[in-house]
Structure formats: structure tokens, C-alpha cells
Image (cartoon, rainbow, N blue to C red; front, side, top):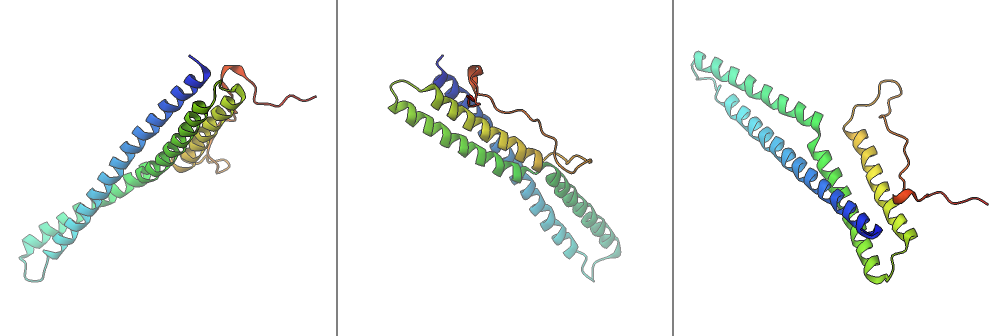
Length: 173
């Protein structure tokens, strides 16, 4: 497999992964939203049933139902706030489009090149790594809790490397 094929294969896998994840989070975000809308509407309707001429026993039952529905709405709101499916959906979709743009650029380059330049392929690879690294950092800042010591999210200090052990450091003379 050539380096260009290897790069395009890896890029395609990442594109598929971000597309699939964004679809899952989009669906989850919408489900939470619809449940919250339904519970809020239900609570309002139930609260309206406690009008002044309603029998006391019925008022008590309806009042308890209003409390239960409001508690469920609070639970859904809390879970949504912890999981952040809306934020993740947008983040993953942004990365997906950045990777698709890179894929389109690589394919355009390869369609015009008779022989793929290794240095150019390394640049494309490093751009892909940069997009993925930025994605991880943003995800860590969005979803993961901050570290209690300094208030910053944990991160690894690895630098993206081009394939086949090629160095991305300019030689010094």
C-alpha cells in the first residue's frame, strides 16, 4: 500500500468515525430536547388541572403528578448537562467537515500529481494529526472535568509524527 493510499485510508476511517459519533450525539440531543419539551408541556397541563373548583383529593393527586413530572424534567436536564450531546454533535460535525475538506484537497493533489511527493504527503498527514489533536483538546475542555490542581484539563504532551518514522523537524546545520 502506498503512503498516499495509507493516508487516504486512515483519513476515511477518521471521517467515518466522526460522522457516526456526530449522528449518535445529534440523535441523543434531539431525544433529550423532545423529552424535555414533552415533560414541560405535561407539567403545565397538569398544573392547570388544579383549578379552584377541583375536588381536594384530585388536587392532591394532580399536585403530586406535577412534582413528579418536574422532577423528571430536572433529571433529563441534568443528564443532558453532564453528557452535552448538543456540544459534542456540533464539535464532531465541525471536525468531520475539516477532515472531509482535507480529504478533498488530498484527492485533488493526487489527481494532478504523477508521483506523490513524500514531503507534501507528510504535510497532509500532519494537518490531519493537527485536526485530530485540536479535536481532542477541545473535547477534553468540553466534556472532561477540569483537574482540581490548576483548573486545566489533563493532556498528553505528544507531538504528532509523520508516518514511517520521517521527522518533522528541520535539520540544523
